[in-house]
Length: 119
Image (cartoon, rainbow, N blue to C red):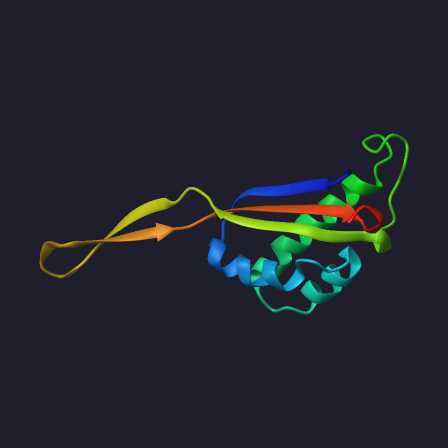
């Protein structure tokens, strides 16, 4: 079974924000997913769009596919996984000498595309 993967590690956005968009495009054709994400106003949509475009590029590269190139119309988004990445931890001073932890979260975005005849 040929799957074409792409990932964005350490994306500077919370995984929770991107998961909403990942659930939206999971199971769609790749060209439909790109059209859907193009009209979403969220910043995570741009990141997910770039990862899907990278996976499409991997599918269209004949060097990786035994001399065969797949068209975008025949690829399905079979897996979109958004995991939490490392956090930058900062301390913010609060009242009466206490401290408050600020967690700047990041995420790992992983996309897998599969040709429709193999799904």
